[in-house]
Length: 259
Image (cartoon, rainbow, N blue to C red):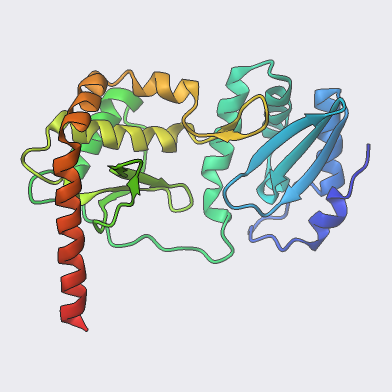
């Protein structure tokens, strides 16, 4: 079953040093062979959703980022197994390929900002290293830094941490660099962002990309202080919000003094 994927692929400018392993038609044909089901492939330059699909009238409509033109055969087979849902291990192989190639997604490469891990109270690198050994066998290589203190409000709360999948960077809100913030709460935030790097996002049964999936929530709950951290956040959120607002005021005042 042919589609326009091949013609679109020839129009794309690929920022890879090595030549692609597939053109659009070849990749679609390989996926057709592996899935043994009607399939239409569209190649995209979407920077946030790298893989999605939907089923319509018995046909799988698959959208893949152009990075998959460089996917080895094993990854293509894993994509097909994921579409058939015959192996959960296939999800891990696809996720690993996407994570390893996220730096190629943006047209203009972004540089890491200056990294600041030593705070007034907490040392993020020490927190990361402990969690890495305990939960990931020391295998994660992820830079992290205290953020600028401009975390956005969300549902009456704060974004305490974030993971940038393109830079592969974890940022932690500096409002947590306080003596009254318990170690287990900071660890739970850092661990949450480490899981985003480790697990990435995968399509659910309807083809939507899900980041807080069931496997993610199960892994998050394996942190021993998870429930205590949720309870502490609920009790102390008003104080953290006020502290965050004060950080914002200080940052704006410093900006005005420099201008």
